[in-house]
Length: 154
Image (cartoon, rainbow, N blue to C red):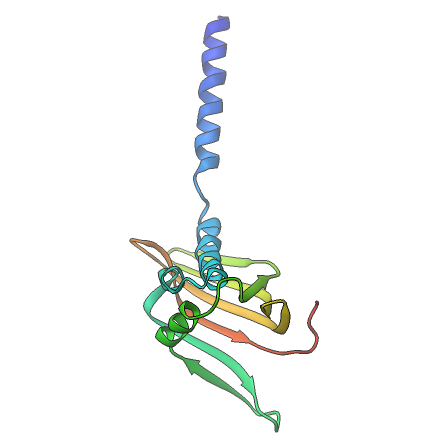
C-alpha cells in the first residue's frame, strides 16, 4: 500500500512540475515583448526583428507646439537598423508592468514605460502592442506608443 501511495505521489509531483514548466499564453506574449526590449538594450537588430511580423506597423501619438494631436507612422526596417547601429546598453526601455489580454490568436498588451539613453532619462509613456499567434510563436504586428517628458515616475 505504501508503495502505491508513494508511486501516486511521485506521479502527481511529476505531472504538477510538467504543467508548471509549460508557459501560459500570457507568459509567451510577455516573452515576445521582452525579446524586443532585450534586443534594444543589447543593440541586437536581429533579436528585435524576431519579435515582429515582417509587415508590422509602428506608430506614435504626437502633439505639436499648438497642442494638435496626430499619429506618426515609422518604418520597422528603419527601427531595426537604428537599434543594430546603436551601442549595447545605450537604449534602455524600462517597463512598469504588463496588462495582457488574449482571445485565441490575438493578444493585446499595455505596458507603461520609461526610456533612457545611456543613464539619461529621455521620456515616458505607454506602449500598446497587438500580437498574432503564428507557427513561430507570438509576433508583434502593431505597436503604438505615447511619449512625454512630464508626469513620469522617475
